[in-house]
Length: 133
Ligand SMILES: [Zn+2]
Ligand SMILES: [Zn+2]
Image 1 (cartoon, rainbow, N blue to C red):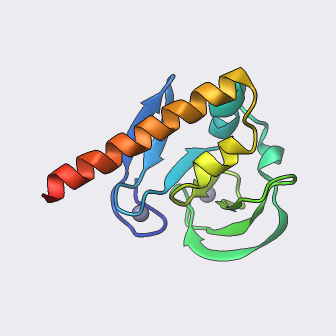
Image 2 (image 1 turned 45 degrees about the vertical axis):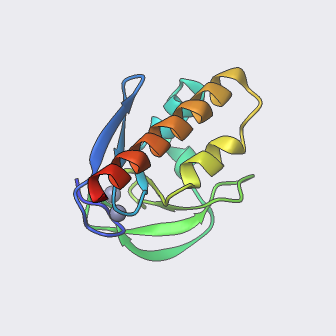
């Protein structure tokens, strides 16, 4: 799958059977519909929960369909995300997945995910540095 931000081929990172499409180039992550809930709470969120408050049209295209994604925030969230209007999923720029997870910190299962994501992404960055040097 192509990165919606920079068109590079994305790498699949697997966590508890959830496939996160991660762009090594820009550090963004694509989550299919349901995966954010699965990741944070172990339960897939229903598609209507991908509705954004104050959404506006963005320039990036959904990696699953030709439509341009909407930009906006989930209710009660400060993180701006890109969501496919056909609800295929959402795109998170570098750091935004951790920021979204961080907003729900304090629950044991979410804290475990946050720790894992930190390791996952710092590993990726270390590997990138090794490749370059
Ligand atoms: Zn990218
Ligand atoms: Zn789509």
